[in-house]
Length: 257
Ligand SMILES: [Zn+2]
Image 1 (spheres, rainbow, N blue to C red):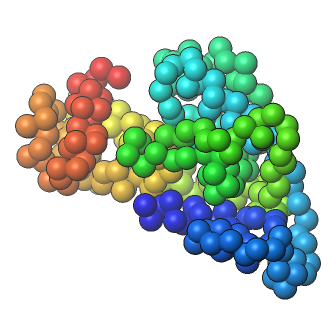
Image 2 (image 1 turned 90 degrees about the horizontal axis):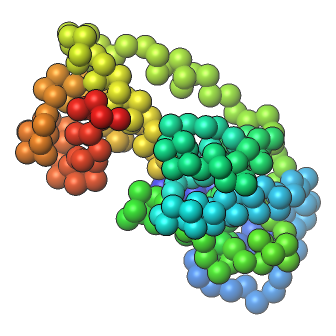
């Protein structure tokens, strides 16, 4: 829920139209005029990036995966398809066959995330927090898909040269002290669990440690639990994490994926 609020505030910052109108919209009120003529966006309009093309490609990808697979997916997976990244998950669902696969290769992930935030804030998309933060099309998506409505972002917040993420990548390659004492098989489980956690974090747009700490993953890798009951005894796994991730963790720890 907090994440959703942060996203809504970010979307507000990235908007190109009147701040007052947006802010009142956010709180469910209407201003009664189109613009206040008094906020920074009204007084000195920022350079604009026309994100209509990116928005249409995102929306049609979300539409297609739902049609083909019958379920909804999160932002990470949708962006992978659009950017032409044939990940294991993309291949698993055959989504590299979609006509939108690779169609948005020119967009950075930062740009696409900014567009997604606008689409969510404007009611074209809904994030289902109960179902792994999957994205679902709303009525507001129709005029954009039909080409009747444009999507505009401030050029400075969605610039093609996105913030570098090297620091994060470098950190991922450092072995965690928690895993130092594991034997070879457990090391492999630990690596698999970390890869799985990275995917989940990206998909849900959350920091990895919010999913599980390294120490918890190391403990799982060491004990190689075979059942939810065995998993439950491990420190760092509460009831809600057990319910949300238990089956997936067991599958990964067994080496089945
Ligand atoms: Zn204004």
